[in-house]
Image (cartoon, rainbow over the protein chains, first blue to last red):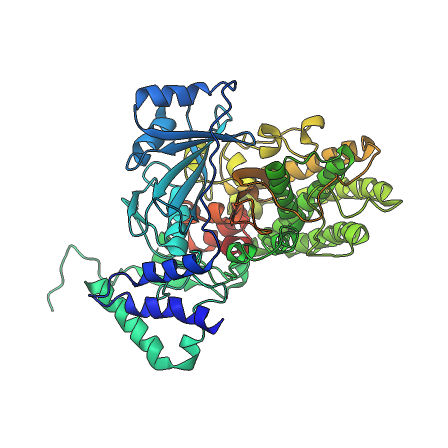
Length: 226
Length: 374
């Protein structure tokens, strides 16, 4: 347990130092080796061949060729997985097209699939249309340290939801109007919902030595000024 | 010093003041940083997180059945609504067919909970504005609902009243007539609140034209539940994506026209009447049968993800759950908290109003900080 507490805090302390680039990943890799098999990621089962694809998804696929990387259907939910870098385009199309009209972004969240091959995070937007009363889930995959296009300019509702994703997972959003932490304190180190973040928190570092805590704060303010 | 004629004689800098986190009218630990020009609010910044307990992280280390307890502690004046949304999401993930009787009893519990939550809302909202009598009246009737819950599941606040696949037990004997009797009492009492407020001149002045938002803007900013319906958008998860027994029970969805605080008040009052209508029909049409489906003792949903929404008293409460199919706890569980999404609209609603109206607007969007911060 003690070892478990130590690893992430150590990496957090080292992160702002200029030369030591890989520590957060190293912590993740160590955890992934210990844990038996890494989760393969969500299955995202393809829709059964006899199930008709909703018209708005067909339209999306024909209007933006290559914009949809994958299509999935599971327990009645349709999921559209956007191709890398094309999330904003796909979302804008879903909002503005006559047959889709997703004017309500009911939820946005992320899932940390630590250790799966490919990008680490899944961003999941649940969209709803108050006019046509249908729902779709929009997904995008983002790697660790990469930024995703913010959907807050399209749906103001995504503003706080994306702030929470940033706070909890450390995924950055390009074009977000106000990307700050929302639930955790501003000077917090690390992102609690990541799978390599211990459930007990960052350990006893803060309590044991105020010096460590001061060093962390200083490092954070230095990295901000950079 | 020479006076600049373009500037007024007195200093008119904008004043930044903190409202909260320890403020009685913020319904918990909410901090609003207000930027004031005299008495007028120029801008507001909402600071939350004081009650953050990491519920979503905790669920990744709990059994599927234990999580029902955690959902109690989200919106603690409407625990049953969160219980219902969670167990239904897991049932959807596992494709469990819930017995019809259980769905009806769940509907009864959810509607009782809606009444209880709306009573707390009405009481505290009115008290914030200055009508203390209404608060006492509302809590008096809420007691009756808490008694009903106590008889059903033994608890008065955190009910843990649902199980994955059904209910912990059937309703006690003699409970259903009590629900009907409560409906009769409550129907009279709502008239009583109305005589105190609906035509009251002070109430009208404090709520009419305050916190106005158009239907389009409300949907875009993610308002949900009665706060959205007050702006004329007829979105109700019970009607649009029916769950429990709502598909079989006729009821109306009241919508407002003006999108102001007064309209949201009228919408919620009418919702309480509709809730009693649903309650009466559900009690009278309650089918016989078991209240628990056949569910494996160890709950282990197959790998997959789903999102399922319910209409809680505050609005759309949704659960997004990802299961990896191997472990006995969710890989990721996300709560879509209606209070959080409603609170996001606060800066937009208070801009241009007076400081005293901020209190009315915080009251009208009906937030519970336990759910905002999770």
